[in-house]
Image (cartoon, rainbow, N blue to C red; front, side, top):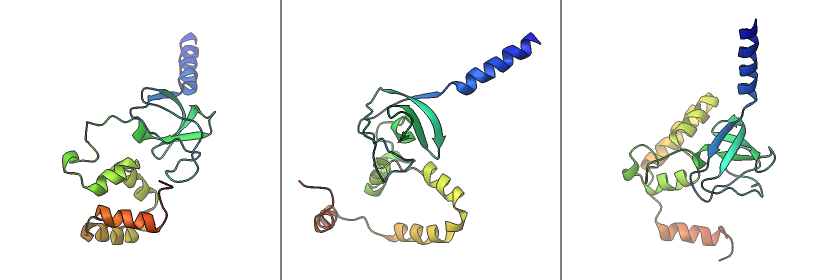
Length: 155
């Protein structure tokens, strides 16, 4: 009987214990919801900071602090990567890979999304074919697009 109580007590403590992660990079965006685009929290995190996780959802973690349980951060903030590694094949990554990795997208994230939305397979096939055949956008062309669309804020 005493052993059962000890096991139950340990399970309750483990269930109440939260996950802790350590931020590995600077410039991490803390969001008000589990998504890359939308409203950011006013809370800041920095490299080396420990974050207590209350909940995990699709590569995102809701933080106990900062943000009092109302802020989310993506796992790309704390996952270890080799220097220069973005996706499999690291050194051979294209500019497109660099841009996607900077936003926290990964093959694992895409795989989760595809699994959660199986009805999108036809649409993914169309996009995948376009990406496979599309040339890289030249930096001057991208700069012109940003300027004409007034994107990127005042400079």
